[in-house]
Image 1 (tube, one colour):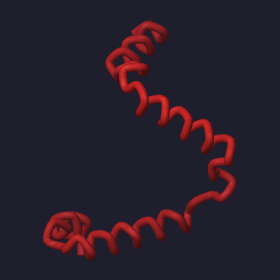
Image 2 (cartoon, one colour):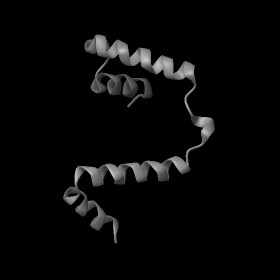
Image 3 (tube, helix red, strand yellow):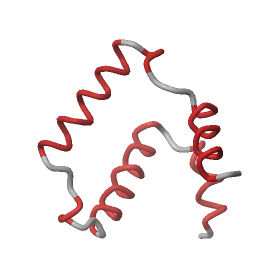
Length: 77
């Protein structure tokens, strides 16, 4: 079965079948995961606090357009 055939058949699967496919893909990807790249508790805490801050004030950050503009100006593009 080709990749295109698999992708075309996904909408025909039940929700339970799609969940099974996701779990199996996650298992396959996890096998290749380098344990040294896992987040530390400190890193996880930083991400959790930043997510909470964004959820508390969605206007606190910058849009992608603003970020892209700043990067392009720094890179001279």
